[in-house]
Figure 1: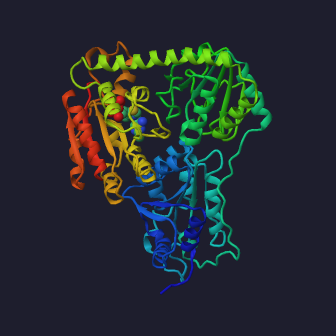
Figure 2: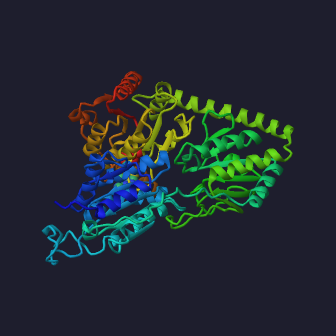
Figure 3: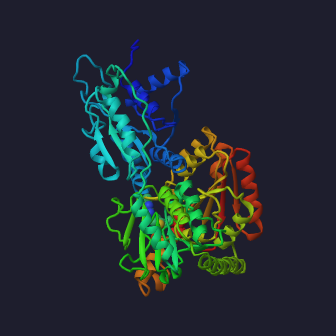
Length: 564
Ligand SMILES: Cc1ncc(C[n+]2csc(CCOP(=O)(O)OP(=O)(O)O)c2C)c(N)n1
């Protein structure tokens, strides 16, 4: 029996030193050295990461993404060779766009059976080894390389974890030869504890300059897009807005809960009317707030506050920033609040502003309520009725994950997002919602997690594999399918370009209709709850039953037939 430390142990020890909680993996035969190390970890009762097996690579990557979105801490993803990496590349691309740090690894053989002293399994000779998997990954990862030798393996993995958490955060890929992992490994004489990435803050003089602008502004407005991913930034934004009575809107592409939607200074998502009259706009965590990008939304000054304002993963981006406050968003906001408190605040002006915006908030909320009430009048279930019912039934600490398309603006406007991390929307291609929601649940086991998803988007997900992961890892989530029996986005886009075209005039559409199965029954293989909801009268009861199911530990699939 081979019974010495090898490259598998080097990788696991690096994960332990990086304080990685989970190894998300979809298996492949290069991983036996790591499985040996995991077996030793268990037999020796040693603390270390938990191995979470997935039946699909995208799912494994997405679960890591969801977990890190909540905790902020990178995890490890082990996939198989080039093929598994290709299958998982959709998730890695999403993580790059979402700036989610992770260490992704897969391996291949270098000796291919030609080393007489190393009997490599024959599948590696032939198509499985591609001679540089990193070539597949480079365009979708922050950094992708092959580990150069068994001697550099340990530090390469540690460095990958350290690099992943640095700005811009993102997935780091390592191709690790099977031979490196099978090679014996001598741990470094002095192994350091790996510190987390330090929090970088903007310079005091830059903070002072922006705070002065803010204190002198008559009509400042905050536009938030990604800030609230960090709960510390969520509360720091509330503190700053409250202190100076600055109204807050979510940008058109907000992917997180950035500010409590029930706060008297909240004015809605994409409400650029407020920005037009502003003399100072604080763009907090901006990604793509203005559209078309060429249109400057205000004659006031724009200050971009973000650790990574210019996104390398975007091919084009214009923030129209006159000033940047670069560094950790929460830190920047806290420093601004402290600087404002230390200066003289014009209390009368702040009070007048607060009154004005509170009235505006109340009328905005009343407008939303009126929209929902009006929606009840038509036949069938309007998506707004579903959103209204969710607001009534679901607890305030619910985490919503959004993988809808044409319904997404409604969701982001009408779903209550009163707490930090109560809303997430993914990046990249469709088919990642369930895995991300499962990763979120793994990180936040006490909070209800509800995935809202279009029927088209649902069908891109590895559904059976994800339901299997939900069962196996005890991650009950509520999956609410907004089933309009079509890819409405495709129809809308077609008619937009060809309003009088052959398709529009004869209602003859390609790429639109979905003749899907009875989605509510898909969970039955796992003993899960399922319900088909076709009338308004059934809606609230169905949500309550779904909530009861997830509380009892069972995933619930609600197939809600919406009328648009
Ligand atoms: C992986 C992937 N394939 C295809 C698309 C193209 N696409 C964008 S939106 C959409 C329709 C999604 O349908 P559904 O979830 O039912 O939402 P609806 O359009 O009805 O609002 C498609 C196919 C995509 N974004 N990602």
